[in-house]
Figure (cartoon, rainbow, N blue to C red):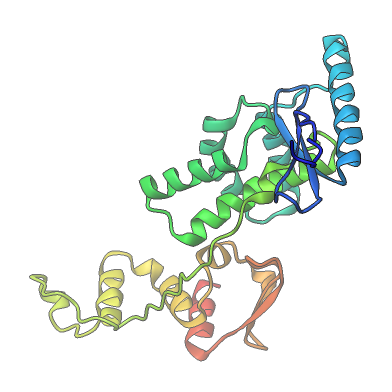
Amino acid sequence: MSGKRETKKIRGIFEKVRGSGTWWIQYFDADGRRRREKAGSKGNAIDLLTKRRNKVLIGKKLPEKLRARQVAFREIAEAALEYSLAEKASHRHDEFRMVPILRHFGDRPAETIKPEEMERWLNDEAAERAWSPATKNRYIALLKLTYRLAERNGKIRFNPARLLRMRRENNTRLRFLNQYEPLETKLDYLKHCSDEESRLRAVIAKKYPEHLPEFEIALNTGLRPSEQFGLVWDRVDLKRKTITIPKSKNGRGRHIPLNSVAVAALKDLQ
């Protein structure tokens, strides 16, 4: 017989690396989810496993009305959209993005949705809808915000979205007027236009002449559409030749210099 003493195996404790002396425990909580925890020595692992199993047993024996209520994803999503409306200029984008998320996860208990389920849904949607890395990141950011707020407000104890990772973005896009030669046209009034800008100007002048100042302002200031068409006269200083944007897309204010063409266009509108 061997002189070595056999060590009795205890179900629920194990060494990840055999012989390391570092023991882990594995058990199922009151909701049936498998949990693993690092315990240290084997004695600590036995004590911790007993403690966790007793806690699970007590939780299962509690009356239903005394157990922690499982919060549906829909509930924490609505709270996140309320926060977005109050705090974010881009709240409409969050509302739009939340629609397909709710369609897929809305009625699930928020804490039972696993990170790999979110990843699978994100990958499927990205493939089907041809998302760019930046678009996918916006959905990940919304999921993270939703769970972070729910955790902060005590609606959940476990935040699965914390394990989601943002993707590297490379969405650089440069586009200039007159970057390409205009296609051939059968319209006589456009045949003399040798570049994109002159052709655009000719079309606007012929069909929508009242919009020419808008074209000049867009071309000479680089304002975003929402900034240009949400502009009020209090933010325009024609003497100092500047436009003030109090809150831009990134949440900070900025000042736009005006050249003589933009000033003339604004005076026409005024």
